[in-house]
Image (tube, rainbow, N blue to C red; front, side, top):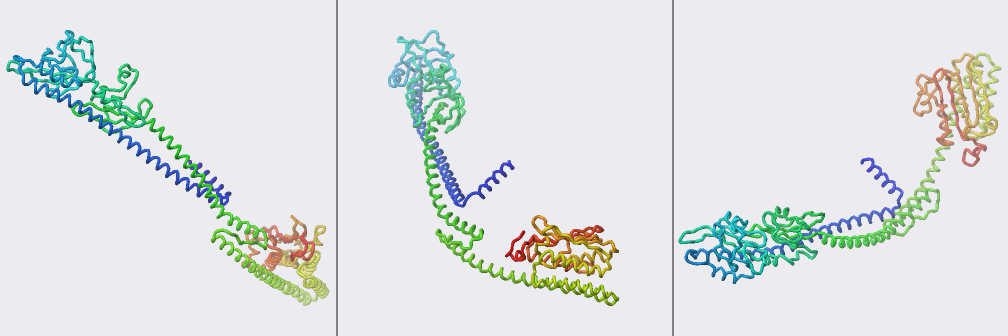
Length: 605
């Protein structure tokens, strides 16, 4: 994961470096705007969804509350009829001397729209009175009916049964109706004695069905059904299909729900379930609202919101493109002008049109470039003067240095009576100085530089009594090239003083001029004692002075500095040396074909 994130970040950085400022501004503004719009749209959509669900639940609960109110009113009327039959009829009559048939018939006739029958049974299940039917089926034993047993188990409480077909009595029309039985234990007076009995009020199930059916819980559809406390269905709009096992309902789970709104997944469909408990019965009124239709509305709303967002993104991208173009075009113009300046153009226009800050930046750059040109001209002139002064100083250091050494040798020879040798040394010294002067020229032919070295070696061989031999060679064509003067002689001086002074006829110095990679190389090699690599690396350091040495190394540094000042850093002196393996000094300068090439006016090879 960390590598994946790293690669993504690297790709983004690469894209950022390759992209123009217009692209970056456009994408940044658009991304920020789109992110804000998407966040706002999703927030509003989710808020709308939650609000719609809440409103749907409230609407469904209001409908459920209204249905529950009607159902509760209907059941209360049944309970009032049961109370009337018990307290105003049964309790006031002694069955030993009178009957309750007339009062029960009157009560039935007054509520026949809601009632199927009213009956009173003794404790043994014997029929005491019934309205409107009067004949009990011989095959029926009421004392074993569920409603009879439940009434005896709930003394002074009412028991509501689940819907069933009432078939206790003989009906000449063979009409058997669906009823909900309301049963209760009552006290029957017979001959002054009270005995237990059961009052049965059969309610017309159609009344409950009429209250519950055709109820619309929400615009997207829905239905409600009625269950008892155990989850048994009392009413369902598709009750017959459920009893035939052609349809399933989540009634057992609904019986476990507390009153309120719930969401459930049943048979792969998401739906909202509202539960309300019907008072005094333990029944539960369950409303079911499928969320599929609501989700379809959400899909349409989502598509509309998506269209609005896409259109807004297109509009914002177009506007951002125009705005970023107004900012980036002047900046690109400045960038092109700066590139022209880097390419060496001297006539560059930095005046651009655009926002105030960019126009001000263009004028500031133009003023800065103008000032920079003036300063560069001044600096170039100062550097040229400094370079000429440093070369003059370095050159002036050479002549006194080796002149002192040579005259010291002439004096030594003269004092020792070696007149011929001293004359020969003075003659070589004169020719050496003639080449050194070179009519004031700094660039001389390689042939003259090598001739200058030959005269110097002649002088030193005489002084050191031929302790060493020297050989000078050059590749074809190299003597005709040009170099700055007096670069070999200081190298030879170091080779003699530090390498040949202790030789005893076995010393050897080799001077070879050749071309390498288009440059002129003059190599001075000796077979002297050499030196450690650390010392060789530090000899060209301006601040370093070799300890315990007769020389200060000024000759090597002088040559190195003059070459660098004349031709630049790629050129100069390099030293290769190891103890007991001699020393090789290489002088590298450009291969000049004309004397003016060193000043930039001639032609380099």
